[in-house]
Amino acid sequence: MFVLYPGYSVRSFALIFALFAIFSAITFYPLTRIY
Image 1 (cartoon, one colour):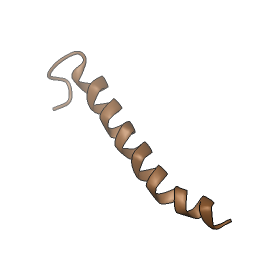
Image 2 (cartoon, rainbow, N blue to C red; image 1 turned 30 degrees about the vertical axis):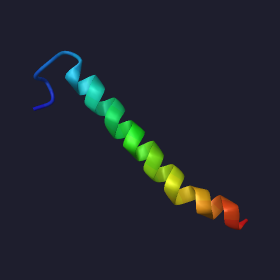
Image 3 (cartoon, one colour; image 1 turned 60 degrees about the horizontal axis):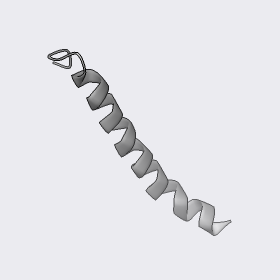
Image 4 (tube, one colour; image 1 turned 180 degrees about the horizontal axis):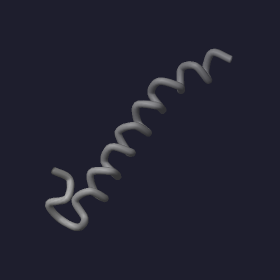
């Protein structure tokens, strides 16, 4: 599924990592503002 193209897996991994980074930033930013 992720091995259709040589760079597709890398691109999807980068997209997932970016979404995780944005989600973690939105989640932990208010926590850092509390302290």
